[in-house]
Amino acid sequence: MPKPVSKHRAVRAIAVIGLLLMGPGGAWALTTEEINRAGMPISSPLQKARLGARAKPSAAIVKSQTLLARQGVSPGEIDGMDGENYRKAVAQFRRRENLGPGDAVDAATWRALGGDASQDIVVSYTVTKADARYVFSTRIPRDYARQARMRRLGYGSAPEMFAERFRMGTGLFRALNPRGHFRSASATLQVVAAGRARPRAEIRLIEADKRAGMVTAYGAQGEMIASYPATIGSDETPSPEGEYQVARVVRQPTYHYDPVKNFQQGRNTRRLVLPRGPNNPVGTIWIGLSKPTFGIHGTPEPSRIGKASSHGCVRLTNWDAEDLAGMAKPGTVVRFVD
Image 1 (cartoon, one colour):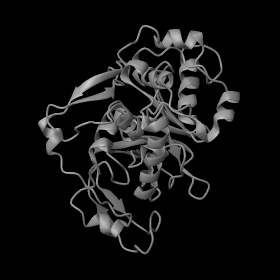
Image 2 (cartoon, rainbow, N blue to C red):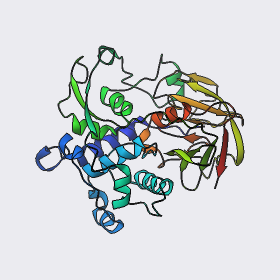
Image 3 (cartoon, rainbow, N blue to C red):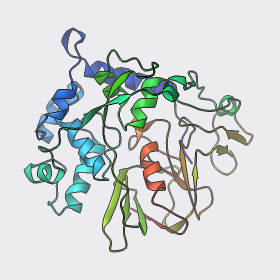
Image 4 (cartoon, helix red, strand yellow):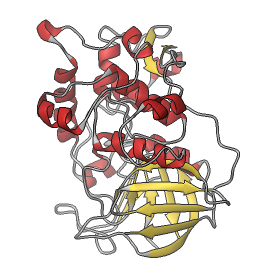
């Protein structure tokens, strides 16, 4: 089950990203035109090492991340950063397209992604009346007992809601909408268009690779249908071994905390039921496995996928969990590999 998370850490991380997105004098570094017209990203491990903590989001990487997501090879959060989840997605795409080993976008990979032909990466979105009426959960305590007393665990802010809807990091969303009127119906926002059509092929196998931190869905002929970065267990609470089946798929689940069966959070020694919502500990999706208490699920902190441990389950971003849930069904095989 998922490890307790801290919203304070997420806020600090968002603040850091926001600072990185700002150039000298507070000017925002990325624009819609820069991203839509970006060419192939140029990077190397040496350049990345030199930049270190000074690395800034790249328009070309935003474009690459979006094109990967459209191909069903998720980079996790689309944030413009040359990070591990992005590199893993590039490697998966190259493997699927028989472009050779490597985790960098070269000329052949860029052509396969349709990079130069794609200039619709950032598009306009009109805020709806439903968006404007959304009631946010502005204060979500870390303690599960206090969360259990809430009516729901909704989004904490409009930027969080829109960023998650469009698979973006909150920092990138704010960068593209520095003066956005998030709560005004008919207002226009700039967002990335990362969705893809539902694949026709049926998935037969879901593979959770513990070492790589990846979940991959395969079809009947062994073809890769989708790929997602994941957090899979930890040394203290490892994920299962071997093969299981999908038992059920629950959308907008409640979270059933049981300190006897799973883990104890703080001083909470009694069973609790936490309400639904994207900031629920298992996010917006629960794909239960035939092994009791284990499953594949979402998360309230998408930026921490692949960077934190879990209590044995498989954790994806909410949008990736929803994508996988749309293809999985009871009986689908789930295989854990090291």
